[in-house]
Image 1 (cartoon, helix red, strand yellow):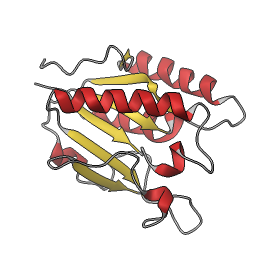
Image 2 (spheres, rainbow, N blue to C red; image 1 turned 120 degrees about the vertical axis):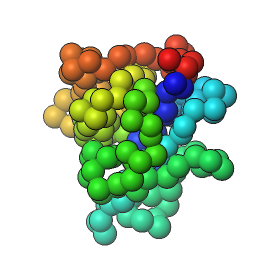
Image 3 (cartoon, rainbow, N blue to C red; image 1 turned 180 degrees about the vertical axis):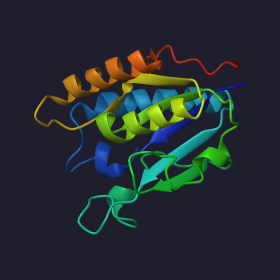
Image 4 (cartoon, rainbow, N blue to C red; image 1 turned 90 degrees about the vertical axis):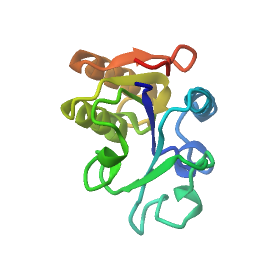
Length: 171
């Protein structure tokens, strides 16, 4: 079965000014490469979108809420309000129960982490594209946080890959 791609919160408010994540240009290029590979393989592509509240930069309808990449015919959109992209959304119904998943997007320690762990609990194999997820600087630098998420998810059974080596071949 061809892996499905989950693009989590790849929205303007994360990757474009006025407040993009650190190294946004590099991360955006990696995400674009992963999306191009998925499309070439005719993989299921799901664009997951965070719906923020009134005080958030991704409140529905705002410029920050919009996707960075155009959604093509046949690709899916899932709107969410929690870090776990499966929670309260139709995501599970869009994916074959045993489909392997490739995950990329924002924010490493929140939505990427929560969705990857939820997918494992649902019986999916998960591959995280390590150069195609990011977060903001906090009490630790963003890159350190993302690497810690890589290590945690790897210990839980997630496979790590890069945008240059991600494989959408049928498994």
